[in-house]
Image (spheres, helix red, strand yellow):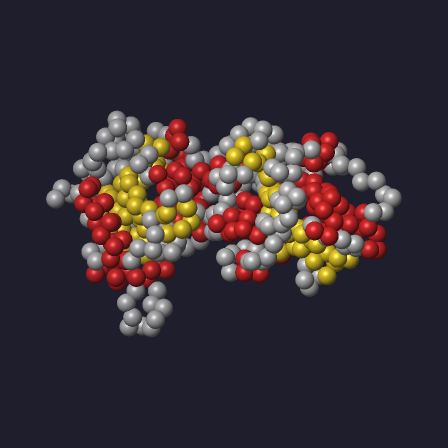
Length: 452
């Protein structure tokens, strides 16, 4: 190495002190110096294990790789001078010893570029960008090396994002910060959080103002980014309007006479489908004794075909099987199986005479008409407005039964689109939200409750 001294911050020094036989999760808020900390972990690994060190750094996007590439360029230049170089086409750093590769892996097919290869240290950055852990878990199979080298995986991420729920459950809520715990893979791990206050190289007041502007008034997201609180970053998109205390209702036993009912459906096969039974209030009290202003919508029941603990993966049900389950749900409530659905199921992709998915539903006894999506943003705004008005005695609101497990599992953690804060992140589990949005924007419910 060169003679230049590389001094870690107190936070980075504490991370470096965690035994190498333990995995790391660098969580917390933004601006805490995690990027430079990951670079220091790489440099130390290369220095300790020399020619046997093989490091893989993974991001979901190429833009993320280029950002970290600059961090490593500066650090390796300080450590090795002209002896360090970077091959941009291969995303590989050439050092006096050791091997450091940067890879973009956003899907199972992209994993092929590293499949079967061995690394002694793997770092996965911005882990909450992956909506499910499957691809991230695959990378662990690449962790192989000599017995005397402690193999390690380092993860990093901030609250929010498509994978907020599974990341928080696995790495944050499992134990207190800085206390070792066992992951689901049986590996010892330590959650090492930081905030911008842990970074002495930042102008704290200025950075705080930048984060405040980026959150666009979302107080929960701002708290998550500044305080690193994963509990308050329950979604960001519906933060401030979705409240279990106001919006959740206990399960009703029946639909009262005079309440209009209809289905709202978002279709999926490899991805989940979500179907909700809505009741529209005529401006009276419900079976629970609560008064619902005229026009209030209550999502009474749901049918969601998501795999257990995998909210973005569907069960692969065919239309006839899905229709049968929908008919069973509506039969329980003694209402007709009809309503609105995603406009996409009415498309004739295979020619003008080909049957649509909606036609297949109709033949199976479930009748849908197009929801008329219109503007997604306008639909989301209408949905947010109704959620915020839940509990009012004068204004209509949107209420969701506690029986709707999939909705309550996914809505509170649904993130904003990082490129458009007025839209949801469509890579997250947005199927319940989409179905509920269709029900909210539809203005002509055609089915009125009647006894069979």
